[in-house]
Image (cartoon, rainbow, N blue to C red; front, side, top):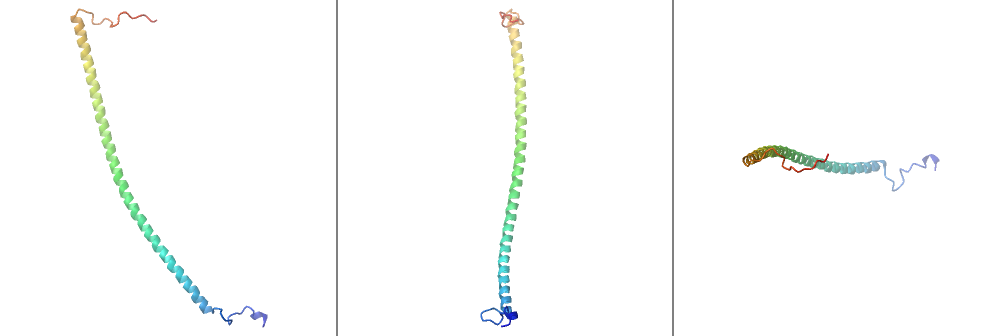
Length: 127
């Protein structure tokens, strides 16, 4: 056999012809294309599911933000009412203290005592 034809194996038995090789390669490409198409369809379904989930979460977030805003407004209003009640109570207590002090002064004056004398006359000089 001539050394030039050592690699020429087209006529050997059991070797595929170039046409058979092309057909086999074509079937491999078709199978790979089908597998990739299935993967793409699954990926698209996953993306659509994620988009739906994102939309639902966005709606929930927006409703929770609205509730939070309403709760903050309600809390601020309750705080204002509490401050108003505290101020009113303090004014009422001051008025009552002033009235009690005035009544004590009148009682002392009516009893003949000096209303402006120190309440504790026997205090030591600390200085």
